[in-house]
Picture 1 (cartoon, rainbow, N blue to C red):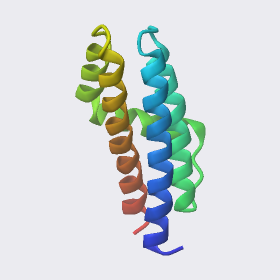
Picture 2: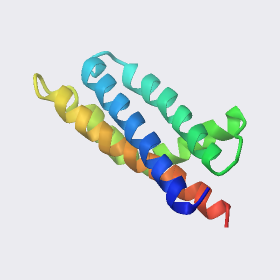
Picture 3: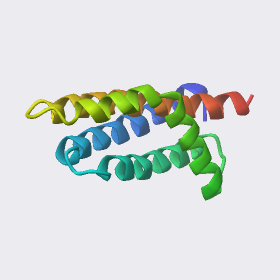
Picture 4: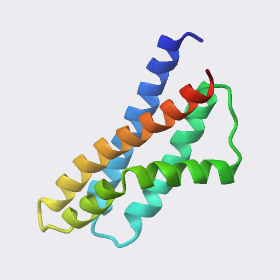
Length: 119
């Protein structure tokens, strides 16, 4: 697979999971704990799909560690989206948009991680 093909496939993976994360967040952002559980599941799926683009398999512990590293990198955004999500009426929309952007950033963080390690 060429770099361009890999990047195109990564874009589809990241965009698809970002859309799912945003939609789920918009619907469930007022349910305590639902956002973290959902994002964790989606980020684990995303990191494994991106790893496979580089012909790598991750053990569950390594996948969880990489997800945690990605989340730590964007901890401020995660806290901010969580707080803003509680604003009546507009909170869900704000949270969804921030989750979409956050998920894309985390996805490209994963991509860069595997891209650097494959050199």
